[in-house]
Length: 353
Image (cartoon, rainbow, N blue to C red; front, side, top):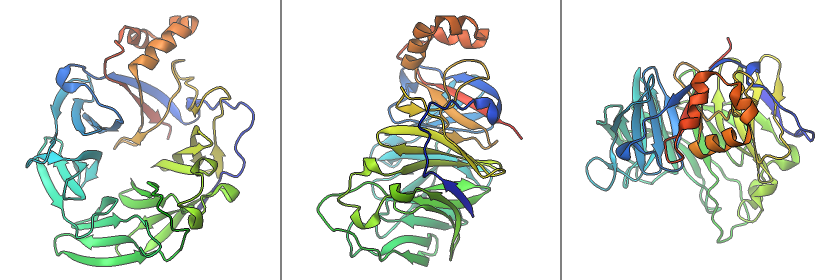
């Protein structure tokens, strides 16, 4: 099991270069017309020929190579093609599947062409759900009351039966306060993993077992479960968005109103954390081409790191960095022509072997 030590965050300014783990960055300008403007809270998922944006109440598909808008998927409605919010996209049985939350279904699966492939049903609406294998899905539930004990269930959705159930009998100060901190799933090497907010350990999920895979050692900054309804979460570590590769585990750490984009080197067992004193969001220094810092948010099916830049941030950077801008390659200098109302620019970062 990997042990990721977060007990000593950097105090001094500490710039970490993209070239430590990458050799190449590509920028994709996404077509921006009325029907293809991307909404807020967007996540990008990149595949061999497609870029899929999952934003608030919206799913859009673009061409990976030239950024052309191809289609929207589903719709925010209670109609036959409707969903209540978008989730993510991944490879399932060698095909792209786009997930969304239904009004009465914890999960709706669309193809990249916009066809509904599956609607997952559940007696009790889980907080989040993920495909495991064949017709089996993992359902995760909040523990909102000290009497709630079921946390994770593996369900055969075709046979409508529970394969296994995992419980949590821990107690906490039960108040009327509601917390949204739960858990998230992610995939690595076709296996499913889960990380809870009130648990330092990442587990691999199988039909009948949870296997410890990695532990984030936060020490006194580990969120105390028994106070989950009363404590100030700003004073504790919040681990999000784990991106797992053969050599690295990338993740986001939020602590005391600051965000750190970090990675763990599996080969050396080192934790790498950038620290820019004057920035609330600490990313990786872009020494590949000299442009804006890189903040990884997802992995492509080719194990490329994916990030994006907002147009207004691009305009500000060019205005504040005229000397650096003149040294940029021509294909990046043309980003200065972007309009503030255009779509985000997707960054595709190739990892070193």
